[in-house]
Length: 501
Ligand SMILES: Cc1cc2nc3c(=O)[nH]c(=O)nc-3n(C[C@H](O)[C@H](O)[C@H](O)COP(=O)(O)OP(=O)(O)OC[C@H]3O[C@@H](n4cnc5c(N)ncnc54)[C@H](O)[C@@H]3O)c2cc1C
Image: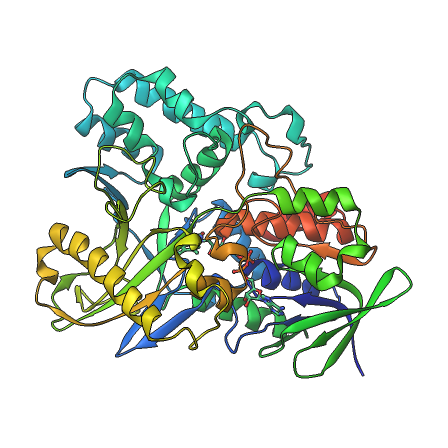
């Protein structure tokens, strides 16, 4: 009989980090993953000598003493990763309808780079920087500050609308857009984006930005190794299909291949709606089920992973955010004629010595509704018309990318595409949403999901609990494990481990 203290369902960053924290605290942990590869959206795949990321393409706050550095130190995985600091004077480049603006790394350098583009806007830029620092500093948990005093109700920035705030500090429309230029990494609309979400993510990357050589998979693998070092288990090709109960408690989970895993506690790394479907609606309050079902998921993604004929594309220490129009907002409200309205381009890296590459990835938004015709199909069984449609879309995106990077013209060896259905079916994300549930600044409490559920021994974790992204998900794991270990005890332990830095 496979009996553990804790079974974690799903090996995304949330499942792995939750499993690791508990394994570090002496629990016998088993992480079950449905795919043959662990990591969820940290996964990479290799084709013709290129290693492409399916999701994660940069990490923030990894300079010594910064928050992700501390997390990785706490997890003891720093030595397992090869990191490359991105371009100090432009790790994110925003191109608004042909004009480039660069994000400098570090607040001082950010200010300096912004002033080059907007010399008359010194006041607005200063105000913006002060606000970003203030908001991101106001969350004990985001800074892993002990003791944690925190209440969502008391945080004004949760319901403060970002676009309105930007309008209040400057009339310069280009600056308003450039300051909101990392929109792609939370993919929300002007109506629902809060200063809170923007500030936490902005602050994370502005502190310092890094690529992981070999991609997100290396991060997932490092977590799995660390779990095993603490006597935990990570098992792939184990899709959980059923929960079994003894009274109100879950006694075991059943996997597709007929295996049964018993535990005292279960933690689901899946979307809460998917968890409810698996666990059975009847085990939750109707009002809770309805609330979860009412929550909207964010937009999905169309990814183009390109292999060039020649290895002549400069290795890019920047993420290139291109917007066809003068606005970073509204790219998700496209129609057939004006898609794609934006793209994010970068060069995945697995060799620090390379200066040119033949591997490029480009991403743009896509609504899953566009693929309604194939919604009942599964991987590799969607038919020839799906393949034709994918090709047509890929060529459109390629055309826009090649306009900005003419070096690509007549230089394409091949490309690989993933659509919202790829994300839905490989990762199990609801609606193929890149970042899960939308956090609406107009009703912030509605989208706050607690890890505790009505089932006494079931907790939730992952990007839908707190916030998406590497830091958001790690904080979710702290919140989830806090239900077992005590949040303050865990934050104290974290600080004790990392204190010598
Ligand atoms: C295109 C894209 C780019 C991104 N770029 C960045 C970036 O640069 N930096 C950053 O910090 N963040 C980035 N993110 C966000 C970040 O990758 C995610 O927020 C984070 O990885 C989500 O982790 P998670 O643990 O919530 O779950 P997921 O990654 O969704 O993992 C869930 C896991 O559960 C497994 N699973 C599902 N159903 C079952 C089942 N029944 N049984 C067993 N296992 C199951 C899935 O296979 C998967 O492995 C990006 C995301 C996307 C989509």
